[in-house]
Length: 195
Image (cartoon, rainbow, N blue to C red; front, side):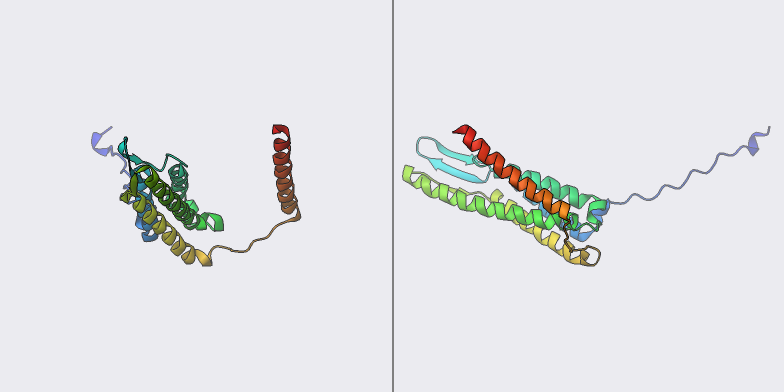
């Protein structure tokens, strides 16, 4: 056999490398940028306080009520909904509205944190202390608002492919009523047993 007749098959041409779809869509990129700001601010301290005898110290959102943990979990769900092509292009209303609803939930939760923090700072004055919110709290809040606005824009854009109708069957209504009734009876029973 003549070695000149041997030919290796041509290799298939490699497709050019591209950025993931989540980084090519400007609204997804807006949500991801807001999410990054929200999560960075979430992981850093939110309050700087001073008390006599203790001096300056910082309080993170994971202390006291632990609201930063809730925001972190909601942020991870927002990341999954925004990064996943199937969830982003879905016709299911809950998946498409997820970033807007969860971003708004984080912003509302941060409003509660703000009110609680201001009340706590005012209470320190009785002990001769004082304090203030750090910029990381505001970064978390701004990130949550950006996520909510970006999610709202995407929900508006998707209104043609997403159904906003809501219907319930008799079985679903029966299940809901039974679940609520069971929860009430369980709560009342637990209170009676604890007495």
